[in-house]
Length: 141
Image 1 (cartoon, rainbow, N blue to C red):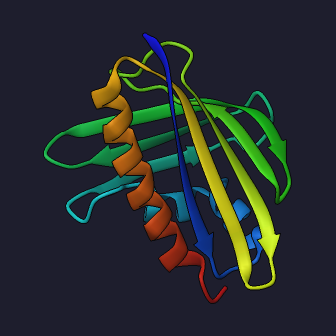
Image 2 (cartoon, rainbow, N blue to C red):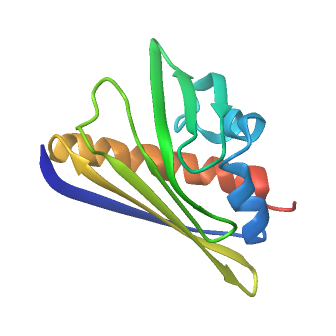
Image 3 (cartoon, rainbow, N blue to C red):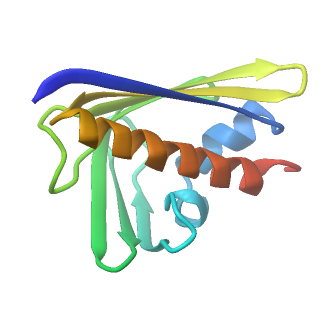
């Protein structure tokens, strides 16, 4: 494991409340938590409280389970959670900051701890796809 990290940003033309709430709503998560067009989400659950857990079963040519524990939930401004998958490095964590702007929300997602640069680069591509789907889903709400 290395201390590699990544940060992905996206401006979304939706209020912080709509963008933030989407991350905690299983029905919404099922619509955006798959990074590529050839992927979908078969199951999403969320116990949206500090110490609560979430689960997302992404599906492509195989099942891709992801889970984690909510470490911080600051309404409409910050989420911090662990990121657990069979191939994730121990102690992987994601922080998402939601900053209001005149035209919506600036989202900054940072993930820390990757096994290697290839894993980091793959996750950067994945999070970019997820943020794109999140924007399409929430813009206009």
